[in-house]
Amino acid sequence: MLLHIPGILDAAEVAHFRRELDAAEWTDGRETVGAQGAQVKRNLQLPDASPLKQQLGQAVLNALARSPLYFAAALPLRTVPPRFNRYEGGGHYGFHVDGSVMTLAAQNGLPATTLRTDLSCTLFLSAPEEYEGGELVISDTYGQHEVKLPAGDLILYPSSSLHQVAPVTQGARVASFFWVQSLVRDAGRRQTLFELDASIQTLTQSLPQAGADRDALLRLTNVYHNLLRDWSET
Image (cartoon, rainbow, N blue to C red; front, side, top):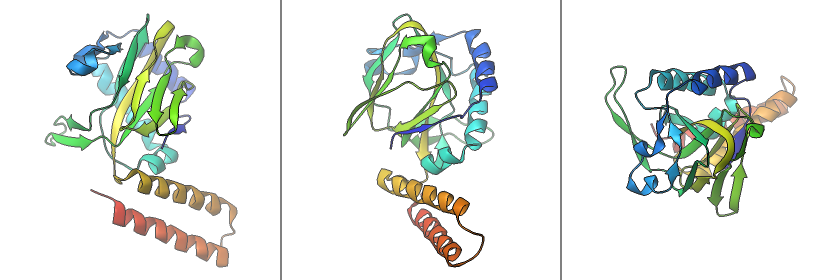
């Protein structure tokens, strides 16, 4: 599932992020990948140990928690703390696939653990008119999809997809990115639950508060939760 989720951050939040990030100290993005990735990666990232990365990353997580659409689509169980990158002056990241398993460092008294990357997310922090190039190109069975979203919007896509960031030939492309392990591992089942949830939400808004239709909606909601109970992993 390739899904555009608008308005994760509002204009004021985007402006705050950009003020902080435009004044930040960046490091070579090749330091965060293995030898194969380093051959095709040319960008800048906030260092993992940066206090600003921790601060803004938590702000991203807080914003995601306010988005019912994001929760319905991702059904998140674990999330890699958001990271931040910057592409400029021809910076790019050639076609690659994200690692299938990542390590979450120990924090808040909890031991280190691993995370299966089911979903990849990019939260755009630069408006499309601020830079040339820089499209996120996602390849799947239906071809290649070029993504360049308004600042504050997020794209969610399968981590199993080959993808790249095209060269930025003018301006700067700033974004946050992270990975999610979903409660529901199977992509087809996750898609079914998402469509079922969307239908329930639409019917909830349109049906009267009582009557046979409302009873049918209640049974449909029961089906959703029973499927989620059966398919989810914790």
